[in-house]
Image 1 (cartoon, rainbow, N blue to C red):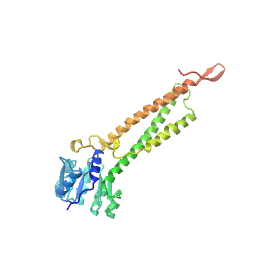
Image 2: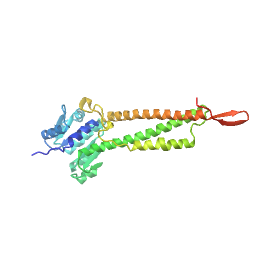
Image 3: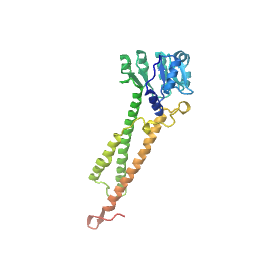
Image 4: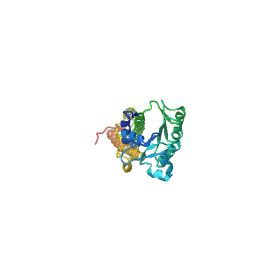
Length: 287
């Protein structure tokens, strides 16, 4: 008799590792059975540790904190053990997500930062305690949700930074012209044109950008293995922010140069002359 894992579980675990997420198996099965299944789908790797609930009870909190990053399989655990596991990861400064379907999983689901209950096989108690309910009871769906969530965060941040970069460039141009007593580089129709075309449409395009688990921001450098090369949540966010900041710097530079170019055209073709007895406008050639 065998209860094999789902076919997509191995790929989902690999995507989670690439995204900087460490999957951990907590089960009521025997330690040997749990380790074999975890090794098959990629959760248990060389150098990892598997412990039972009795072994976990014998550990102090300090001992658990030292070994927590190496333990990838927990077998024959109790509800109290699950809470200790969640608290140990949280003490490390990590964001912890816990999945469960039974009544005994409810305390750990409530304690975790993100409790995920099973929508098909889950009990009503677990669903009430969880932060979200997984409708198809599939771990791969969680990875898709992570990809969508990071994509929404990235799009919102990119759109805001894009709008700020363009508007700040326009402000700098106006301030620059005002300090040098030059004519205002933009008229109302120019600002309206910039807001409607060069700001609104690109911002909408950035906000509608789609992505999946194969996107660069879902791949965290150095997250292929655990242990000394394990990528924490803060490192993951730092990598994602670094990629966004690189693109933002390019947008700022382009917007700044574009605005200064428009200002130079405006000032170059329209000067204000003050002559004895009258004030008039005259066109001159640029340069």
